[in-house]
Image (cartoon, rainbow, N blue to C red; front, side, top):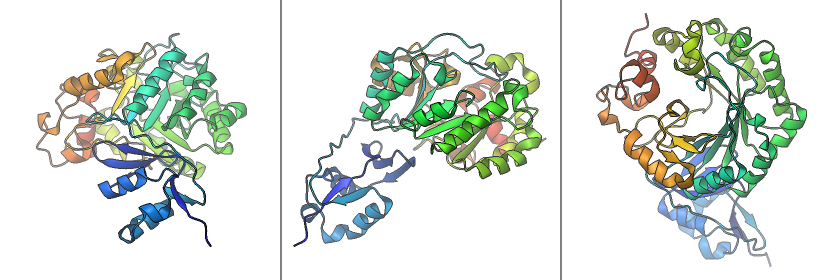
Length: 392
C-alpha cells in the first residue's frame, strides 16, 4: 500500500498577501500571482495535511504547475513547515535598500554619497530593521554602503540573515571579494551586484587598478556559485564601450545588467566632465538585460514599493533623498506610511500624466525630475529614451 503524501511549500518560497496574493521565489527572484483558491491551498502546504485531504480534482492543473515550478514538493511523511503571512501595508514595501556603512575604499567621481565617512550600522539596529521588513511582507533586501564589506562586523550581520524569508542581494564594488569572501558570501547571498562602469574607462571613474580587482571579484563569485548581476553608469568616457561591455557581461553569465545615468549630485557635482547630457545618454539605455528593475504597480510613480535606510537609521524614499528623511528605523511601518503620504505620487499628479508613454516609464526618476523641472516634472532622460523628446 503506497504511503500517504504531504504537499509542502518548497524551501526558498514564501507566501505574501500584498496588493494581491503572491508566492515569491527568493532564489530566482520570481513572483507568482495567485488567486484566492491557490493561496489558501498553499497555506495548507505545511507538511501537516495529507494530499488526499487538500487536493481535489478541480485543482489538478494548478497542482501540476506548482510541482513543475518547484513551488511545492511531495513528502512521504509529515514534516512541519511554519508558513508566515505578514501583515502588509498598501502600497506594499517590497524592496529595501539598506546602507549599512558609508565607509568605502574607492573615491568614485560620480558617487551620490560624496565623500566616504566612518558611520556604520549597529547589529541590533540591523536585525530590528530586517525583522520589521519581513513583518511588513518584504521580499528583497539589498545591502549596500559605501562598500558593505567594510563594515567592521559584516560577517556577523550576514549570520542574522538565514533566519528570515527574504532575498538577499549585496551591492558591492567587487574589489574586496577574494576567494574566501566569495565562498562565505555563498552561504548568505542570493545575488551579488557588482558595479562595472566601462572596460578601458572604469578606472578613470573609480580609480587606478579598480577594474582588474572588480573583475577578479566577479570571477571569484562565479566560481563560488553566486549569481552575479552588473550595474553600469553612463558617463562621458564609456559611451564607446557599450557593445564591448554587452559582449563581456553576456559571456560571463551575468543574470542581469542594469544601465542608468548618474544624477548630478554628490561627487559628480564636482566632476561634471563625467556627466553626459540626458539627450545623448538616453540612447545607451537600450543596453542591459535581465530584470534589474523594481517595478511599480497600480497608478503609482517610480519607486512605489521601495525605500532606503541609512547607517544612522534614517528612512527616505531612496539614496538620492537621504537629506529628506521621513522617519527612522524604530518604526519602519510609520516611516513607510509617511513616505507614501508625502513622497509617493499617483501618475495623474505628474505634469506629464497625459503622455502616451506614462505607464511605461511612470514619470521616471523623481530625483532627476526634481533637478530638471520639479518633483512633478517628467524625467527628461526617459522622455528622450521613449522618443517623446528627440535625440539632438
